[in-house]
Image (tube, rainbow, N blue to C red; front, side, top):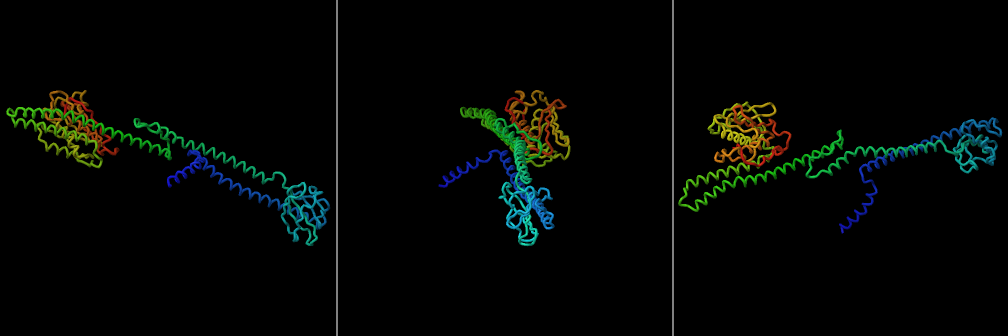
Length: 493
């Protein structure tokens, strides 16, 4: 069966895989060492062959020169029984006549039989000979040359023994030792360099192994430089950052869902209970019920329910708007349009710089401005002032009223959902308790801020700051949106 064949093939491959080094450091060391062997050993062999050839050629030339000198001496009669070597290193010299009879010899060759039985066939031709059967000498290298053209001419043999450690053998031994030392040094150096190079990788692995889902803020060490390991560390840290941000976005979404459910169940219960009580009362006493009054109260409660649901849904959607929805908007023109379409009892005074543009979701900014103006109208005494200016990197929108203001200790609480500062600001004034919470979430979704301060007139001032270029350093405005904590009691829209 194919599964069995695959299993058997895998099992046969495993022992072969285990023969090699398991670590990258070991594999690099083995590879570089084998590469050094492939480079050094053939080079040494070729060098040895060339040096041997040069050495033997030089030795043969010396022997040939000595044989020529001795043959010339024999022809002129200057050679007797004793032959004096005239070329350094060539000490074995013999003049051998017909019948292998030694006619003359050097001191080193005295008493020895003929060094060779090979005779050159041509006058003055020299032959290179190697014999290893000469008694007590071992192997010898000789040059042989005929003295006369006649067939019975004596032959001069000149050469030297190969016994002992020749220079070529010394060179071979020295090269072998050098190659072995270089290979050991290559393996050791590669092991050290690879270990030092891969040490940051082990640090990254150790740190990654210690990171868990509850501690995504940890980062791996980043070595200096711009090599592959440094880029790997930076990539890993970037990935961890994205994972951490994704986790935060997920947790924020879950928290918003829980808050939405809690807020909805909390705030919808009161108008639903009031509406139910009115309808049950009318059901029990239909003759005593004023139908017009009942319908007015029921429609009022339904309007309030609709407003609360609309605001809760907007809060849930604010942080999820995509960056593609943000477009360049003329903020100055948007403010003028929103103020002109309102019918406010308290006059609104505008102090706007012209032509200020921001990247934002137009509908969200319009809702933010509406909420701030509604809040100011609820608490102003005689005037509401809207100011807009720019400092080059951000635009600043201020909405002031001349009401009672917000105590310093409560200026953060007013942005919590369903928070009111005192019982006098009750629901019959028309607010859902979500206006300022929605305004702040919209500001954060656009990478801006919304804060409460004291107005020069003594009332409240709400200051919105938005970057002109939008969320240029963030892939989604949801990253900037922080959930507003649930709470009760406040100055609300």
